[in-house]
Structure formats: structure tokens, C-alpha cells
Image (cartoon, rainbow, N blue to C red; front, side):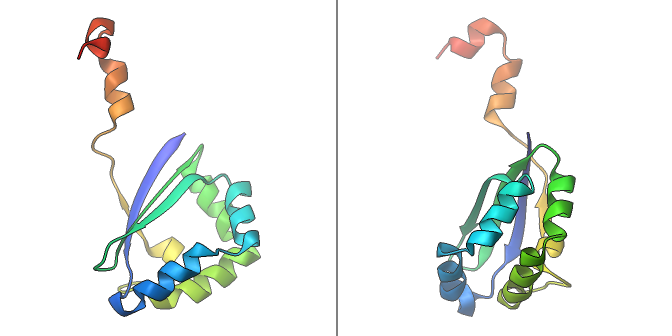
Amino acid sequence: MERVCFRLQVKPALIEEYTKRHAEVWPDMLQALGDSGWRNYSLFLGGDGLLIGYFEAEDPAQARRLMAETEVNSRWQAEMSRFFEGLDGAPDEGFVQLPEVFNLETQLLRLPPQQATAG
């Protein structure tokens, strides 16, 4: 599984509505995400509109491509695009992917056995 983290900027005046929309995501959108290979998908939203997204997939590029091919995703992205600042195109195409610089599990696996259990 590969981990993907991304950021977008929600318009501060629309934070409340954006949050409400994500409290009840369309069932067919949820199903499409799962069918496309998105796993452990979460969104985190700061009071200033900074949105951080995270998901895991066996092949993130393929998961994004499969999702982009669905009709429900086209409808969802069209509705969601008005919530964001600084986007050219759909939110799922315009997010900024963040590089991973630390992962606890990965580093724990590198430790010699005696160090991994010490503490």
C-alpha cells in the first residue's frame, strides 16, 4: 500500500458548508472510491481553510485514474470545485501532493531487533 497526502485550500466563507457536505457524501461516490482502490481516505480541515487529505492505495495513480473515469466523480468534482481557492480544474486534479518525510512504521522496521523493543 502506498500512502498519499495532499493539500487544498477551502474558501474560509464556505468551510461550514464544505464540512456539512462531507458529513453525508453520496453513497455512489463512497462506493466508487472503494471500488477504485482508495483505502483509509481521510480529510482534515483547519479553521483557515487548509485542507489536508490522506489515502492509501496499491497503485495511487491507477486509483485516481479509475475514479476519474466514473460518472459520479465528474458530478462530485463539479459541485465541489466552487469550495476551493487557487484551482485550475477539478479539485481531484488540482491538489498539491505532499512528499512523505517521516513514517514511524518504516523507521521502526529499520531498527535492529533489540532497539525496536527497548524503551
